[in-house]
Amino acid sequence: MDQLLVAVATTRDRAAFRELFDYFAPRIKSFLMRQGLDAQAAEDVVQEAMVRVWQKAHQYDPAKARASTWMFTIARNLRVDFLRKSKRPEPNADDPALVPDAQPGGFALAAQAQDAARLKAALGDLPDEQRVVLELSFFEEMPHPEIAEHLGIPLGTVKSRIRLALKRVRSELGEDK
Image 1 (cartoon, rainbow, N blue to C red):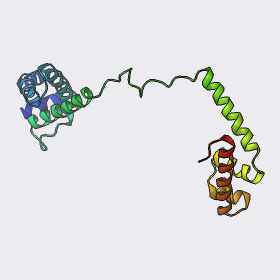
Image 2 (cartoon, one colour; image 1 turned 135 degrees about the vertical axis):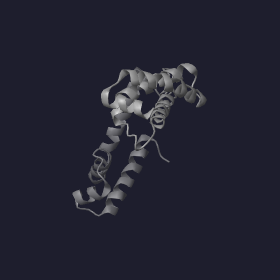
Image 3 (cartoon, one colour; image 1 turned 90 degrees about the horizontal axis):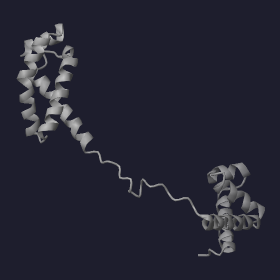
Image 4 (cartoon, rainbow, N blue to C red; image 1 turned 180 degrees about the vertical axis):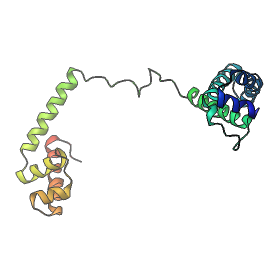
């Protein structure tokens, strides 16, 4: 059998390939069915394996493995690929994770606008030193050490101004804890 595969590799000998196919296809199919594939799936994998044998025959090295070992390895790898593909779950359109979030309605948008206005007013009532630190931290997403460096104040001062500002904003919004 090794000589047949070498003939396929070197001269693309169709008669040699047919002989390989006739000999190995049923054996590979039996192997795949023993490994858990149903008859139709095994047949599909055998067909793909034999196509790969034809396409990659030039890569066969008789010094490394026998033809049967090489061909069964191709079939085994294709079986693994087949099982991976078949076990992927189909997306369920009703899955809550895949359903887009509903757009907020008129009442929700109005409530958001009111909340934004209240927050803006509460921020406006803060002393400038607290408001600036809070804006840099939350709106500019600047880390506390950078705020300290940017404003030329100690890190502890930045943290205490943020804490005091948040406490005051929560109080004005009625969210005291």
